[in-house]
Amino acid sequence: MPVFADVDTGVDDAMALAYLLASPEAELVGVASTAGNVPVQQVCANNLGLLQLCGATGIPVSKGAEQPLSAPLRTAEDTHGPQGLGYAQLPSGGEALTAHDAAEAWVRAARAYPGELIGLATGPLTNLALAMRIDPALPTLLRRLVIMGGAFDYRGNTTPVSEWNISVDPESAAEVFSGWTAAWSPDDAAHVPIVLGLNLTENIAMTPALLNRLADAAGASSAPMSVRDERGTRSTTDNPLIRVLEDAMRFYFEFHFDTGDGYLAHLHDPLAAAVALDPELVGCRETTVDVELTGALTRGMTVADWRGHWGRPPNALIGTEVDPVAFFDRFISRVGAFARRLA
Ligand code: RIB
Ligand code: CA
Image 1 (tube, rainbow, N blue to C red):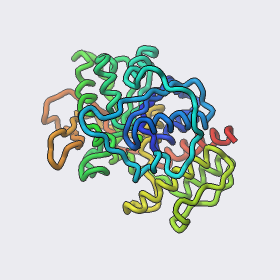
Image 2 (cartoon, helix red, strand yellow):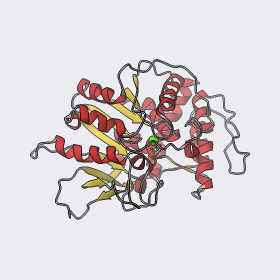
Image 3 (cartoon, helix red, strand yellow):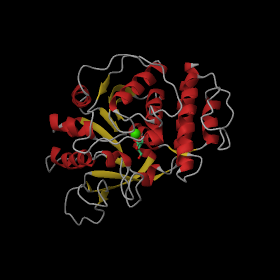
Image 4 (cartoon, rainbow, N blue to C red):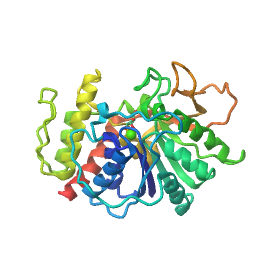
């Protein structure tokens, strides 16, 4: 299945890309680099370095917009580390970026695989919105779109009510949700996007024990991490991918610990990647979603009209149930085996 990933690589975006590369049924046909967790140039470097680390050649990586559609860019080095991968060091260099930008890359990929392409967006929706401005029919070309974003009947992680990906660029999210409806004629069975918010993804908590299971699956000896370790302790495993994931996760564990979640890490984007390949992994409810843009307290809030007050057609399937054990079994078996092959 051809997959196009739009990421703001960051720690969990990197793990989502590793999962796609580890999944035999997925063909990663393109990567859009979106400004978010770190500035877009750093996202590009992280994507190129990760693909190089994974021995993935010939996958076009495109650079997205420097800024959100109308808001000034905010980044999250406190969460993902100064370069977006925690304490991990990626290979420098890698292949060259495409000459065209990320929005054009979305359009080219959708047109290259009409009706087949699976879209995955795990960062702000800036470049997807720009792509839909280039080609408003883009939603009708996709087989499926999975978006990690929003928080539905659930608190935010960036403001009291907004989730990071939406909060960085609320205008782009509003354009994607409204443009989705506009792309389909009324009698079309619109393939609405699957939208996984914090209400769902915060059920997927990576722990030191689970990370150790991943290292074991890769045949990589590794001492289980602990909150008592000295901060910044580097992985000692000789497996190149496990070492990067452990060094990235330690920073992410430390951030979650400092914010009161415990020494764990929510794997928002890997869940979205797994759902992009297999929507059966989650339970969903169809509804109409819109994004608050002007609220002094609520800007960036995703609002789900569960009761149909707005009288508008549905434009989203909201993820509402997931089995974390099933997800981690699949994630660990795939990424562990993939990492083992890289040793
Ligand atoms: O709110 C979580 C989302 O914001 C994840 O995609 C994470 O990578 C950050 O981009
Ligand atoms: Ca992300």
